[in-house]
Length: 392
Image (cartoon, rainbow, N blue to C red; front, top):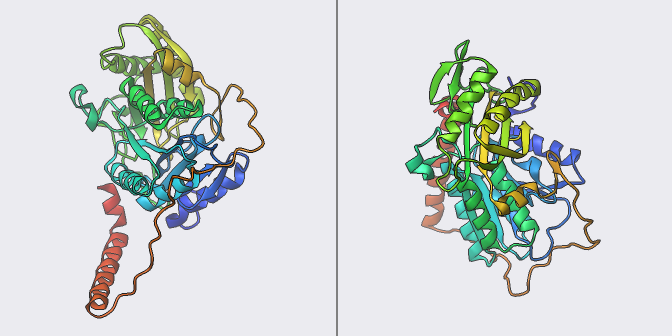
């Protein structure tokens, strides 16, 4: 259960305030999320991760040199608005354009897409990419319908590293697409998570069972199975992923691996599981490259884990290995930054258009009163039935 909060409705805002205060050397808070403490270097692509909160260290925990330039943060398990996405993008961009990276969920696709169109219309090139790594959410011939879960971490890392190297926007998008096409994830849940202020978990798993194919927003698994040993679980996860390997991956090769805890599974348990996973990967002719074992994409206090494999080529391995320095993820040593790295927007790129306020009169005032009344009624219904709607 999530126990520490003030007003549940302000849980995310309070979290952002505390997060920025704890990591001033890495991030600063802006309306809608956080950006790097130091301005984005002029001309660099601004890579922005985003989605609902409740998944720490995704998404804000990976903001820093070598990784994301900023993170757009919505309420718990809720897509951030287009206004939030736009606000963070304007604070982070430096003339090289913006790439929004997020999981394949309807709200994220809609809101980040709207923000990207608005930014592009104002002279700031902006693109979106939705991660689709969850093999349990759609069959292999319908990968575009798959959800994005912990495999997004690998996509975020490689795309961010490409941007750090100075790649232009289209190349950074290409790297995200290429990584996603070679990434597969399968997860299990042993018990559900509880929203701040909630009285019960969003779902439960019977004692001695597990939910296979969970989502990271409190969605239960797509099927149930008996909870066996760590060895048996490792075999189920590895077998499932190998059966869905990318067509161009071959039978062996080098893989980035993420064994991800979802919030309530202890690190010791994950290492027990990893011992079996590593042996099974070796048996399959796969060599793990800088494997990550720990909490990287959580779901509040959900008990469970997921396994991600990304089949690497030379380019992806270089980007996966590249150094990074963020509040939640550090790798290697980054070169010293020059004293002045302030963002400078090219003179040819226009600022956002002025949107002057318009005063209504006559019949427009009456229409506005009706609209306000309707919006207030909708707000009241949403607050009254928030728990039931959340479960849906």
